[in-house]
Image 1 (cartoon, rainbow, N blue to C red):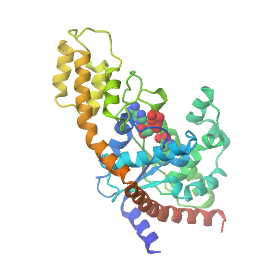
Image 2: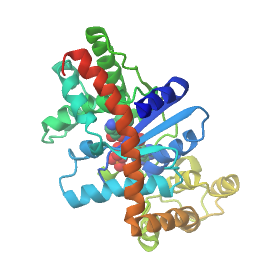
Image 3: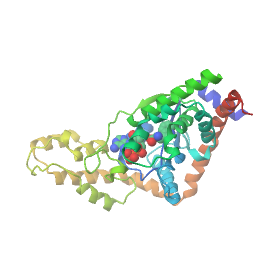
Image 4: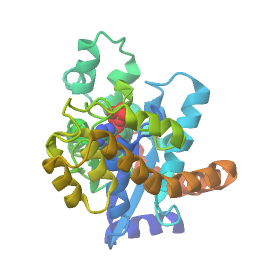
Length: 334
Ligand code: ADP
Ligand code: TRP
């Protein structure tokens, strides 16, 4: 009782931010820029409570190799902590450790119109690309709504492609509240404004395009990838446009010092693509080495990470079970 009182008090006086990350591949620099870095700045906001979970039930839709799913899940947790997420103050947990997610999803599915799911972008894209669509993928927005509504989250930081899912969560909360008198909070999407980071082929960095710079790859392999970054065919002494250059975009994302001087060197043709790539690799080492070192510590002592996730699951369960109890009561379950 005390624990649930504490949970509701927290929420009464704090803004609650929640986000999930699906363990669907090796975590990469694009994920860092678009998802990890913005969260690191949110964790220091006053009067804010942060929930971050590894959406492993969602991951099942993409990864059907159990060893890989476990590895990706642990890597996400390790990546967040190695990058500076304070697991003592942030509730970080595995979605599958909190069974209320699955149960609320089943309850919400009874009030989810089929047409709503048929209009979902992710489902339509999968169909358009000739992918086999499972029930899990089709019902993905319902589970995602449950993920959010269980915690009565005020704000959900997500990328552009997830906005529609947040709207669906609002629709389902409203429907449940008006039909059953529950008090589910309507979440607001917090749009990440960083834009997308290009991958080594110039398209958006994404594991689907195999063009990523993975955070935990060894540095020699990363160096080769950097040297393969696609650039235009200008000669070393030609002026170059930094705003249309993948290497320069990566410099900006990695916080290369004296970036204005580098832009000037591009425009005046005093730097070649090859030299810029060498500088980028040096910056990547400075940026990644401390993260990779912390990652090694965390993964070589797996119990540290497990303990963090267990503590997180305990706190998450307290909050989630309290919402689930309210919904169960309201809809007429025991
Ligand atoms: P992927 O495209 O590799 O499959 P996900 O869709 O799993 O990546 O993205 C997980 C998170 O990382 C999302 O918040 C997404 O917005 C962010 N993200 C992924 N790729 C990039 C990128 N290239 N630039 C910025 N953010 C990205
Ligand atoms: N669908 C999100 C993605 O692919 C991950 C996710 C699952 C999520 N449940 C969530 C994000 C709840 C925010 C809130 O990026």
